[in-house]
Amino acid sequence: NEGIGLSVPSNMVRKIMDQLIDKGKVTRGFLGVIIQNVDENLAKSFKLPGTEGALISQVAADTPAAKARLKVGDFIVSVNGKAIKNVNELRNAVAHLRPDKEYPLKVYRDGKARTVKVMLGERPGDLAATFGQEPPGSERPTAKANRFGLKVQALSDDLRKRLGYKPSTKGVIIIDVDPASDAADQVLAPGMVITEVQGKAVNSPAEFAKAISAPEVASGIRLLVTDRAGGKRFVFISPAKGSTTGKAPKPDKGDTPKKDEKPKTPKKPEEK
Image 1 (tube, rainbow, N blue to C red):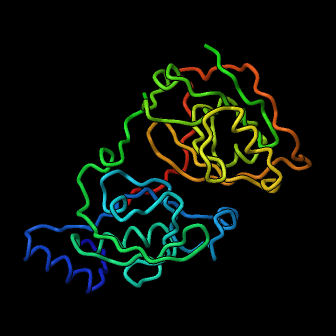
Image 2: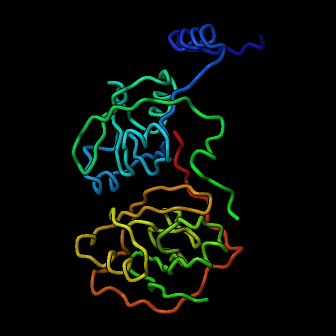
Image 3: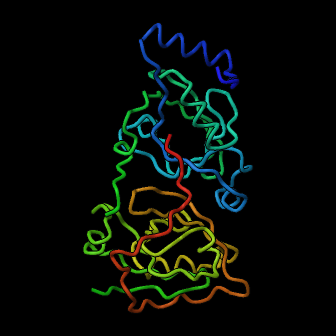
């Protein structure tokens, strides 16, 4: 004893001891989602009642979450009747629940509350494999830099291969970010792929340009982005001051991201 005292809740100790006696090991509940906290802008964009909870940004295939039909964009506010304030609370709540048992989750989807029953699994040893995350390893039409400070390009098969993305990855790739933009503040960077704008898939610069020019996104826009490691997260970005909506910018030719150009490391959503 070096004079360091560690305080562990008695109920947690009891659960651990029960598991050790019953199974000879400690098991943790597993949901199978990537989650993130939300700010006021994201909460407003998703029509949520507030910011307390955890937003699903990715659902791994063949996991308890997938089998319960949880969706990307679902906002979890309680687990088994216990309110969830943030990512850490959801992670701890699920981890301390018994696997192979069904629990109710209260979620918000499309602005409406609903209860989803989930049969939790046991947390796997290799989370990266579960979520399909792997280490990152000719000119195409682009959408010009716009009022959101982003310039994107079509994601060709050649680019997917060169930049280390899976063949199934769809969207438009960021090739330039205005350093003075909100997009830069949100750590968006060349090499990342935008898969959705306002909940709708975008597969070409023309679709992206049209989506960001719509009148309803005058005050800001919600994106779903992914990086070469396979991580996904929602981002809400505001336009530059003084900018206005108008006709969608026409696609033109742009530079391809360099193979060795690595995006800035974003605040990685948590695996659960």
